[in-house]
Length: 569
Image (cartoon, rainbow, N blue to C red):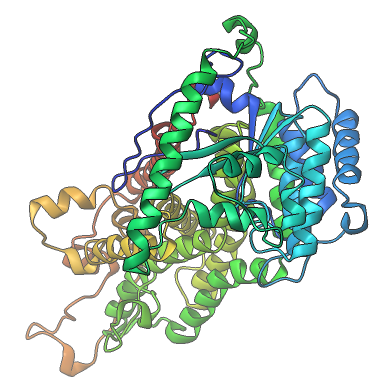
């Protein structure tokens, strides 16, 4: 009914019948504008925002541009009072890791977000699930108040208390398979069943009685046949009753143009982008451990590299150390190469970008999916806001890593080398972030996404530099898509420019020369004697392409589900 059931590769949904609005059949876009949908869980709330901030930001994103900021804020404050959230308005939402408001208060906030837009119809998926009896009663009291304002409130509920059942105006009772057994006024349900010789005992909860009546007892073979016959008769009886009633009912028909005028547009990019940036920064700033972790992942790696490689020397063994430094610095436990003399630098930055993405993007993605389903704003606003909040950390950590790599480890201590390393670090981390966005969008399961991304990165590791001097043509074609190839081919020439090597008498060749005496000879030996400037440009292009592909995946995912159009960008 809410148009939120989307088919996937493994699951296909098939709908039948029609849903009419006062006798008319509107488009899905109009239905989504008329109806607001409250999900069973409350995972579309950012845990580090307060209740007031959550509703203020929701008002800025969801209410029409014709309203001023002060009017939107006033609407949010009115909803806080209406939903009984004043006492917890300045408390954090919270999560399983952060103490916040109670489960009932979270459910009220989720409902409050939806009624900001004053929807004509409010659909709720089991709003009392997981709540205690008192909280469930208070939630239904709020819903009844909303219904009395003139809204249509449609809610699913499995089994309510007897005092809660009396609050319902109309009831639809469904048997297994979605067959309707009763549809009508709640206070007429028991008389209807009584007319069919099914009396509800005076001391029995009407809801329990109704559900027991329409349930086939599969636990007892002697009862299964009897209960199945009862349910089938109730279904047939109601179908016959509906056929008779349909000839007598009169429906108010509305014109398609009238329904079309109720279509709600998404917030424009210019309206949504600054709000999303502000909200993202606030949510991120209140997580100091996440900020520290995001910075220290790169800095910590730089410290380990500096401790392990510094100082780089100019003897015969330093040829391998210098090239090993350019090729490697990935944590040994990640790729299981504990026996190697050196670790992996370039892929590590990619992995760090991916891990940074995993720490933040899935939660942001889930919130965005819910808000995009609600037609709050488009894909472009979300994607660029996420990029804006990510960019400062990537730039800062790239400079810090470059300081450690160039000046502490002992690469040529020049401004050119410093900014080449900074540029490469930034691009590689950005590509890792893009891969994280791509696979975390393609797959909802974060663990599976990480596994797939890790496999791709491991392939890229072995084809990026020293370990890929001579590889088959098909793999070489794949390598042109990898940023690691271009990073290795621009860092190696810059880091070995003008470097000379010495060797001991026992290491000299018969002609008295060292096997490798200059950085150029080392580059020629490993097939890295290339133009570094072209590879710098190629790396930048690949970085931009990766981010564009990540955006395209997010856009395509939304369009395939039927919740995004090109004009909604």
